Structures are given as C-alpha cells and as structure tokens.
Image 1 (cartoon, rainbow, N blue to C red):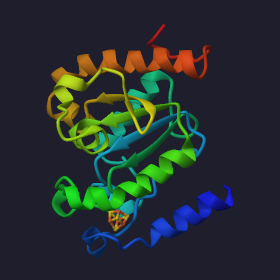
Image 2: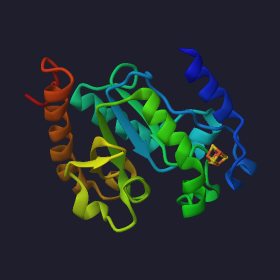
Image 3: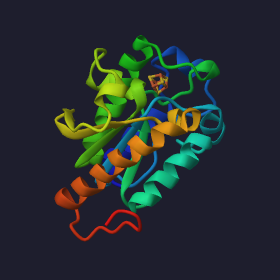
Image 4: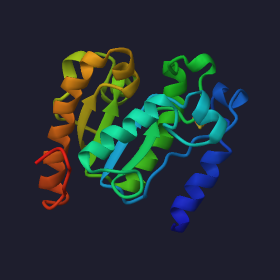
Length: 196
Ligand code: SF4
C-alpha cells in the first residue's frame, strides 16, 4: 500500500466530522484492492459491519458475494466495496442528506485512489447521493450512465432482492450487462461460469 492510501485510511479511521461518529464501533474503510477495475457503492454499514469493521458481511453481503461469484468477480481481485457513509446510522436507518454530504468527500477521494473503470450503485440511496435526488432505482437500474466522470450502472441493492426475490431476474440481466462491459473495457478473456 502506498503512502497516499495509508495516509487516507489513517485520517478516515479517526474521522469525527458527522454525528454518526458518536454511536459507531468502527469506521468502515471499504474492502478490495486499490487498483480494482470495479467500484461498488452501497448505502451504509449495518449491525454486523459496524461490529466487525468490514463492509457487506451480513445477509446482504453474503448475497452480494454470490452475485459477484456468478459474474466471475471477487473482492480480492476485481471489486472494491464501499458505502455512501462509513459509520453505521443508528437502527440501520438511511443516512440523512447532511450525513451523506459530509461523508461524500471520503468516497470521492477513495474512488480517485482506486481509479476504477466501472462504478456500480447498489440501491436507491447510492443512486440518490451519487446521481441526484430525482432518480428512481426502479427506472434507472440496468442503464449505463456517467457518475464522477465514470461509467456507472445502478442496480437493486441485495437487501431489496432478499425482500422481493422477484427482482432477482431483472438484476441478473443487469449483472450480465456489467460482465459484457467488463470484457470490453478491462479483460476480453474474463470468464464466468454462467455468462458465456
Ligand atoms: S460517517 Fe463519514 S463523515 Fe461521519 S464520522 Fe463516519 S467517516 Fe466521518
């Protein structure tokens, strides 16, 4: 890890810029290689994440790992995973606009450090704070757009798929589009057991 990333992480770990610092157990740094070609943005850490200091390790995270695996992706090589805010909002509520605005510069810096080819926005909160308040996930999922000057795909959050399994079929189409684009932009030889 180079000095810039180490300095960034050390500063982030001690951040007290918003009120969420008062109730957190851990600042969630994000997870994945700092040269990952795909950057995934969720909403906020939940109970398990706050307790253990890692992103997406509860039921939603386990489903996300299965979705990534079906695409031939994993956290060790292909994706960096982060959130709109890095500290858990009490009761797992969505972050407020003020909390998101205060934390967003950390995310923007992290995206610049990783320098991914593809952004994936998981769910309505990531979509709202990255693309703007006028967008709805049900209307924009599966469509490529530009956020932070990068090619970006919004998809349903895994927690929405757990609540409503009927959304899995649509999400599978979105994941296939991401794999096809990954092959065009990053690695033409990328293989997935399920996506020819
Ligand atoms: S949520 Fe973000 S801005 Fe607020 S204390 Fe945590 S790291 Fe800092």
